[in-house]
Image (cartoon, one colour):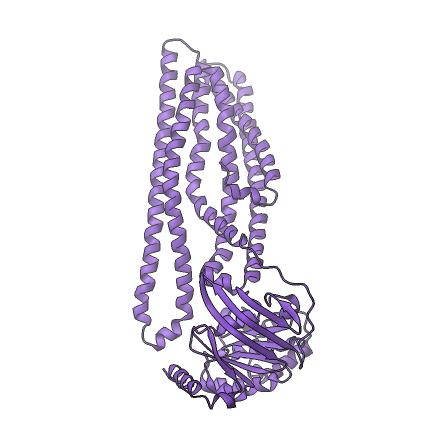
Length: 572
């Protein structure tokens, strides 16, 4: 009955043992509560003095308090287990996402992963909090009460025993339907999350092309589909709740009829009939609670399944053979490399050699494979085929600690956190001194801007860079990179794509002097950068179609045609 994936969680067996012991104690307390209540009612019916009822009343009160104590202890144990494991799962998910890199993000979608890591974890925690106690209640409490009822009244015991599997069978049928609808709803939620993130990312482009209002219909349709899926789940949840209440009430009514007939015929005394009638609703209570909370736990179960599917994806092992730090005479060779993900080949080329402190431009149409090549060079994607060699060391991929420790990566839209400018700059180097931060700020060209701010480096900026321009965000990212002076390899993925020409020109003036004594690999659509590059790699349709020095390539007619095409795309 327990979800198999729960047994993979840390401390599950110890937690189940403790909860089972507490549940067994609670079952006997519930039995005692019904026993003393029935005794008090029978004594009252017999018109006994209050002094004769004192023992039964005290016994009932003690059992009631003990029941609440058991409930509190069980909730505490389940809450601590759920909180600890949901936090562990979140850390494992983040670590696994980092290790698998952009290939996982491309496969799952940014919105889905963000939603899973943030909103999914509270759902998992809620699932773990509820499911363990509900299942143990269902597995222990009814059977303790049923054994006692059998000794008190055989007919009532048989009635309760027969009705239990009938109700469970009906609930299983509804549960399967609810699971199917919930799976569809969760898939719709994932699609809506990815769609929402994609819409936000492309909002500026949609506005520029005058398509934002038209695209709003698409956003509406996705959200409307999710609303309908949610309503389908709620419909089944309400139906199953009604059916469960109906059948349990009917079962109790049948028991009451048999007990009433036996009392009228003088077959049994009042006390056994009363205690059986009091315990009958308690017998069905765990089943009703499990049914009512089942739908509340489905989202958590789906989220846990999705997290475990990601954690099950194997992480390629890093090679441990040491690499020397990148120097002026270092060399990286890539031969017959092919890159696959999403069951599709995205990049394939014969040879690429990177030497020393070159400045290399990657150019080509959008979707040609520039970012894929950058991800390979950064060790974020592993080639499906081919060989790589760094200073004579053969590698299967660049997912190597010595290689990646030398890299700095600056994307199109570097992430800015809701913190001070200084904290954002120190993000990768939290121990950096004030003097080191000031030097990075000056080199990145942020000094004049910071002088206009009332609190300077301590000025807080909004999440995602709200309140600052794209150029300022790029300069903060550049300052982050400059704090670590040991990193000699810089990867840029169109860092000026969203900047206006004036801002880009100012940023370019800042960046070019910093390229000295570094290997710089620069993916761009902005062709004016080519004049400052030592080597140009042209990528088209997932292949390196040509490469060489800018001056040499300028004489090639095919290269000129491609440049004309790229310039036309940029103008559009």
